[in-house]
Every structure is written in structure tokens, then in C-alpha cells.
Length: 383
Image 1 (cartoon, helix red, strand yellow):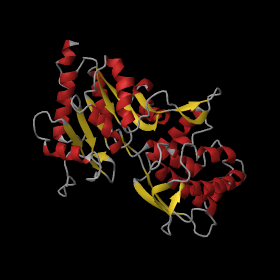
Image 2: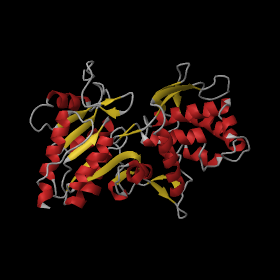
Image 3: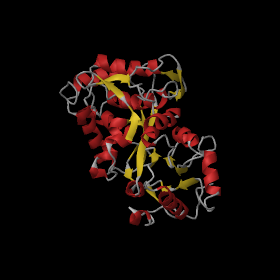
Image 4: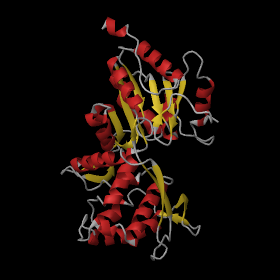
């Protein structure tokens, strides 16, 4: 072991030079002392979001194990129905509630359920997706998913796995990843048809496609593990879907399931996912991420704080803030605005990137291809 600890770790890929130097230094200093590092998953270990991608795959392939009656319960579960959704307006400028969107979705799902061969009908999916009913369904599901979180902590993209077994969910995750890795990175906009009678009226939704693997993070995981430092994932996405991506050897991250923490859903005696979330562990979202690290991960390492915390969004701020005195903070740059909690940390990291042992590292990517860049272009996005 002595020979290994004397060998300076070397990271590969397009790390910005100060980040590469600091991470290699950190690993060398903290090697073989039962230390650990914690990473967000979406937009940190991968480019884009596996949970959103799975939700979109379900919408586009109508992969639901729900009757219309069950669907009606699922899309309302733990979501306040009559509270105006913050920022959610139809094309006429009227603010909407979940109740209005849910009423329209009930009607559309009933049509799809009885007509599409992917559910209980006879018409091929290719024909169904051309209908006005399907366009209304897809658009309003995206809108409800986007805005329900403004009034509660329920993520509709995770709720719609209700009725599935774990193998069924894993199969969708694998199909989603395989497709998303080949798709062009792009943003699309839908507007639901105004001619269909509805409670909510016509709405507009935007969504993204395309996932990219981050080779630099893959190698960082290997370098950490080789030096006796355990990498963990703490994600707001559903734990099971993230585990498929993080643990399957085909994708190259090669973590073990016990190294991945995310939000969990309860299953019934038959192994079928229910509408209920698992509240026996902290919800790995916002403040819950810090709590999850403290209660689920730190005890495995004698109560220690992590040596490295990595993330990209305000959902990761709390775990960064909780361990800012103990851990190096790695932030994946996403053009964060001054209104975001991470913005001051990013500015601090950029201002002090060339000092010895910086506490905050900011890593840039090419947003058009989702890959790390080692040197910023002349039009510097740091602002």
C-alpha cells in the first residue's frame, strides 16, 4: 500500500487546469483514510437529467401500468389541487391549478388507454401520437410535472412509475439511456391544441433531449476508489433509475448500488411500486441532501464529513453549505443567474481559482455537446 500512496493521482480528460491540480492534490492528501466524496447525479455526473428523460420516454411510448382510475389518483397524489401553480399560465394568460390540468389529463389518458395498442387499445402508437388528444396529453403532463413542484415536493416524473415492478422500471431506464445517448442535444417546444375542449385551455411546454456521459467524472470515480476514497451519489431523482445508469458496467461509472442514494418509492407485497414515497429515509432534495449524507453516509465512515461535494444546481446548495468547512466544493457551471443560491459560490470560486488549494472549483462544459472543456473560449461565459 505504501507504494500506491506515494504515487500521485493523475486525472484524465478536459478538466480546467486549476481544477485538475486541486482534485489530484486532494486525492493524494486524503487517500486511504476511510474518506468519501458525494456527487449529485443529473447535470453533474451526466449531462442532462435521467429522471426527466425517463418521464419523456414514458410519455412518448405510453409506458404506463395504470388504469384510467389509477392514473387519476397518481397524478393528484400529494399535489394540492386548487392552489395556483406558480408561474403556470395558459396561452391566454390565465394562471392554472393542478385540478384544471388533471381534469384534462383524465380525459386524454382515458382516450389513449382505450385506443392505443401500447395500453389497452388496438391502434398503433405511431398513429396515436398524431392525434390532438395525444398532443394535449403530452403537453399537459410536461406542464404539470414542471409546475407541481412549485406548490409541493412531489415530482410527477417519479410518480408515474406507480404500477410497475422494479424489473419493468429498470427496463425503461435502460431503453431511455440507450436512446438519450444517441439523441441530439436540443430543446423542443409543444403547444397543446386550442380546438379541444378543456378546463385548462391551451398550454405550452418546453423539454430537452439528449444525455451525455462525462468521462472525466467516470475517471474521477476510479481514481477516488483506487486511492481508498469512496464516491457516493446523492440525487433528487428516483434511486432505482439512477442506479441503472451509475451501476451498470456498460455505462462506465461502475458504482455499487449501495453507493447510490436517491428518492425512493414504496412497493407493495407483490413488488409493485405504489403512489407512496418512502419517508423512512431523508428525501434527497434540497435540505434533505445534507441530512441524507449526515444520516446515511457519514456513519459508514466514522461520522466524518465528505472531502468533496459536487453538484450543479440550487438543489445541491444545502449539501455544499453543510460541509463547506470540510469539503472541497466542485460546481458544474450552467450559466447560473444572480438569483440562484449557487451564484455567490461560483463567483467566489472563479475569483480564487489560482490561489493555492482553492475551496471551490468551477468546471465549464460546452453546452452544445455536453462535454467538459479545459480552456474557455474567447467569449468567456464567466460573466
